[in-house]
Amino acid sequence: MIKKLSFLFIMLIGMLKAQNIKNVDAATFKKLIEDKKGELVDLRTKPEIESKGKIKGATEIDFLAKDIEAQIAKLDKNKTYLLYCAGGGRSGDCALMMQKMGFKEIYNLEKGFGDWKNKGFDIEKK
Image 1 (spheres, helix red, strand yellow):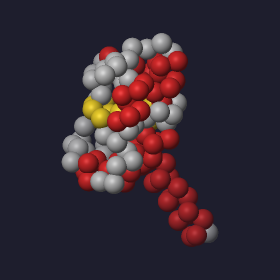
Image 2: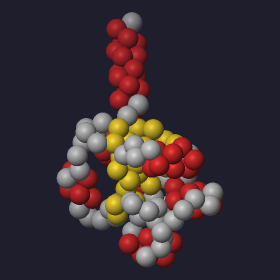
Image 3: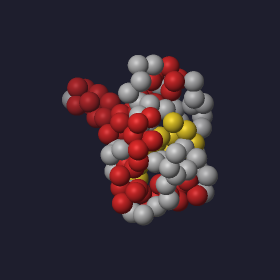
């Protein structure tokens, strides 16, 4: 009985912690940007951004960089972040990393920049 209660308690804590990461669709992400609900971060590589463009106003942080943890650690943990990558994988991984580092609120563009672009939302080319 105690093992079951311990397991349920651990699961509940995990579920509560995961609430600071919200996976959202492109329309919701667009609204968050328009309402200035957080810091916009593009996690793709420089060549990806140069060839496909980016969402206007995004800070570029290459999630594949060797010093990614150090770069993320420099960010303000009390701010809200709007993360995206090409398809949602790297930004999802980054959101989990940020959660473990103590960041308070994180939004992940679930299907990434590709979905944003396919929806016809504005992009900026370099």
